[in-house]
Length: 198
Image (cartoon, rainbow, N blue to C red; front, side, top):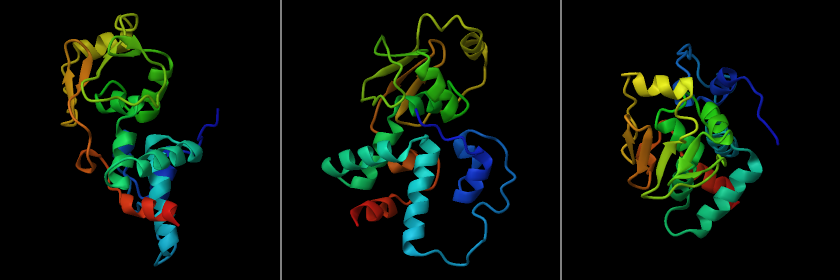
């Protein structure tokens, strides 16, 4: 399987993404996008937006294009549907519920089978959750040190409003479809739509 091995903070600086959106607390981001050129072409702006979204969610080009094609066939605004589909990936849901400190870590935890959806073990990071789905730490994993500590820890992770997190049982419920306002970084999705529409 292809894997992006680029240093995260360097890529954040290039794309102008805050490291906090990636789950990293480093804030030495004085020059987020690098001032190499005074003005970017329209194509460069569109490409940067696409690369930013792919980077944040940890998706490669082929899979991203598949998401775009599904979004363009769905009802509603293509850009909004695309972002909603990306937010509803299981690895992103695990990250947003606070069970992993980064999306990369969440992807690995899901791949190793530590989570269930509606009681069934799911080890596919791209699995799409729906309204009413319950994402929980599996019975086999709940006794592991990292999850035990999470249950005992008093630190509260504020889940987005489309997710309802139960700290005591280490599970969360999808209560709504995520919208652009629920996304934790700035994105101009219309530029991605324009890029693929050419």
